[in-house]
Length: 385
Ligand code: HEM
Image (cartoon, rainbow, N blue to C red; front, side):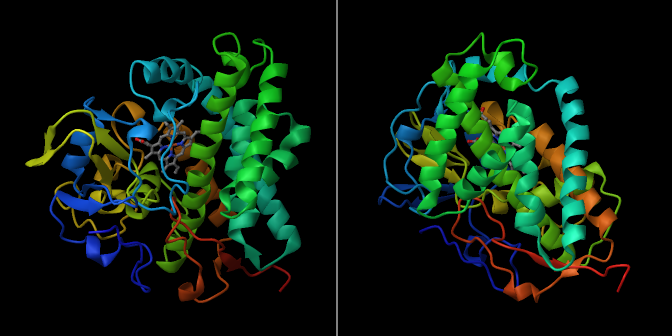
């Protein structure tokens, strides 16, 4: 089997129908012809992600689809690029970074996120309806939040935001923008002092300029597109499904993460370093196991009535939308804050928010590494009219 990417047109939030009813582990043909595996249950996913006999090294991985990583085989992770490293190399970076995601820093960010969301909503309100929620709201919020986290000076916010927007919109511009942003970050890292109260300052004494630049790039790439797509796709889901709950409790965010599972095309994945049995199947050394998070997060063994979107689902937190094991999402706490504030502020400001086009016309990112919408036209009634 090759990984299907198309969703049924009237079911944009459900995994492709070919992925339903598969066994826990199925054979999957990767883009380069490699015959690996697809894991589709919560137990199989935990077994793979929690086992050190499976590696996250990118040079060992076969890629499920060319659209996810064009250019074929990857080289080993450069210094600081810890997401593609195994322990113990990974552990050192992870510890240093966990020390930077402190409760105090998250609290400070929380009030900044509320301010950033309010500013974006002011701008929407001033311009008047309709608006594209992706460019007006969902993309700028995570971009500005990463600016705050890394300590990008306010004067450079526009440069940063424009570049991150170009990086995440696929096309010939994207690698150029990434290069320019990497150069900018390298310079920023050099300028920072260990006394600066931000993430780069906090790690300046511990890591080299090259390491710290790559750490900053990982945070940017891992944290920006995911959160932006979650914000926009989640808003689309709430509008399409007719949910306007203004009280977004913690479970509502968890349930949207579960139900939408935006990492969808066989990511994350791992490669076996030796023969390992998973869910009764023998995965041979060198074989790559891809995970289908949208299917895993609708596993009936883990969730009651898994196809239903229930914003008060108590067991929603058991989802694997942030992964599992040593690479489990470093930014999950921050993402939860961004999403909670993002949805709440949006529906508080525009209680009558609605789609400005029929739901079937909202363009979906079926072939992109992170699922979402390319634009989300919305409208609302103004008090004047
Ligand atoms: C890792 C999902 C937001 C930073 C991961 C992984 C997943 C994930 C599934 C595991 C990858 C693997 O096992 O190979 C998400 C989703 C997000 C989100 C769905 C938003 C809704 C963020 C944010 C940040 C971030 C806001 C940072 C500011 C990272 C980093 C890793 C990671 C650095 C790699 C961790 C490691 O390898 O140790 N994320 N993420 N993520 N995420 Fe997130």
